[in-house]
Image 1 (spheres, rainbow, N blue to C red):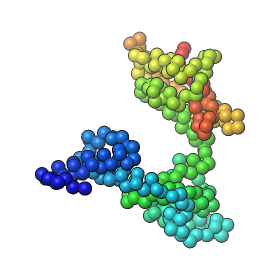
Image 2: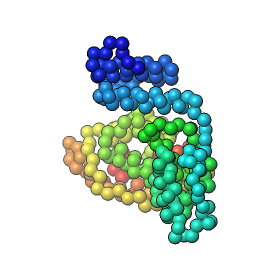
Image 3: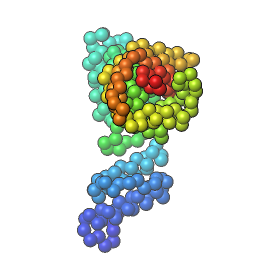
Image 4: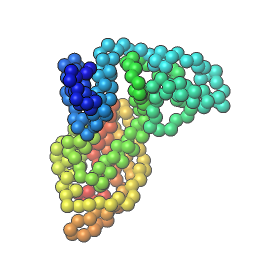
Length: 271
């Protein structure tokens, strides 16, 4: 795509960018994003990437991961000795990466577990057949096999950090809350609990001294989770410095594949 009367290469590139934006909007219904921070060349690369992606996605067929990575030869886990599993896994991961397919794991697992997952589960998983230079398809092991202990610890850590490290953002942070949250024996909706948190943070700064997760328990069928730990922190205000420490308990509800905070007891909060 070229302008009829280009004045210089940069003007021509800008003209091409405008055409790409128009094509994305008319052909794919994509609203124009704010690309003002990009150079004309950077914007052009991004727009071409998005246009090529949308074009391929529009007619993409579903194919198995094994087909995407070129049907490499491999042995079943049972055919490998314990000593050969690490190298076999390394080779498979390398082949996958060369074809733009990457497996991510939030937690450490034995090589045999991941090798078995790749060869017996991931290879048969169907994905969109989209191939663009530089594009990488990421799969996450925990999306197939949730690690509830890890998720509950992560949710707990994020809540404590959000509470003590920065201002609570109701529009964003409230998404981590269940539809009702238990606090001091009463049930509150998202808006109400956010107001309580904002009142706690008002005119205060905090310094986290220690936070440790002790016991994590959960029952997925019942949709219940509980995290017990120890919390120590300073709260600074115009009235002075207050030091709070003690046990903390956070309760979670499992709903639609995610853990949501549904209750908490924290030292110094609401005292």
